[in-house]
Image 1: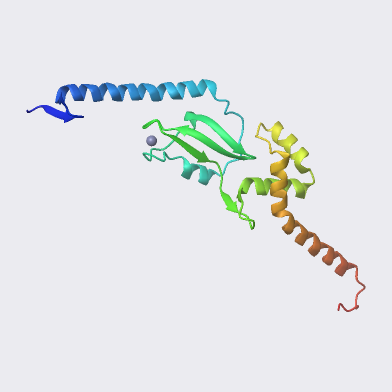
Image 2: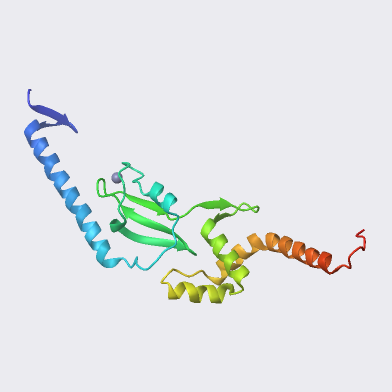
Amino acid sequence: MSGQLKYKNKFIKKNVLEKRLKSFAAMRAGRIAKRIKASASSNNVSGRRIVELDTLADNLECHKCGKELSLKNIVDETHSGLNSILHIVCCQCSELTKVSTGKTHTTENNHKHSDINTKVVFGAIHSGIGCVGLNKLLSCLSIPTISEDLYKQYESEIAPVLEEVAKESSEKAAEEERPVGSKTS
Ligand SMILES: [Zn+2]
């Protein structure tokens, strides 16, 4: 039976199969376009983000087919503080890939923390603006804010470092105040 193929115990003419495959591909392409169009009008992914350019560039790749992903095809976003996970549809295979905008690290207590959150909380403490001040600043910049609970989690990560710095600076101050010539024991 030339020109015929067997599929699921049924014979299919090769040209019929090719036609079907062609219309299937067209349908799929239509679905992808529809999904992207729908997401563009419904998703509220806007504003500003603080991203690590090299990390984001490396992550912009479809996990299924390897095609480079476009920021125009973001359909959703989840974030933990300032670290965003962008949900991007692949224009080639329509698969969804979750793209992180920054690096993470593991804390001493084995928690996975985002670098950006650790740094921003450290900055808020260092500058003295705290969680409330930080969120006011972020809001003005249209950058997602950080919840008080999450802020506290990151604060506890850097607390030992801050204590060490405070101890060192008080020791240095005491050293400077000590009269010249007096011996330390
Ligand atoms: Zn793909």
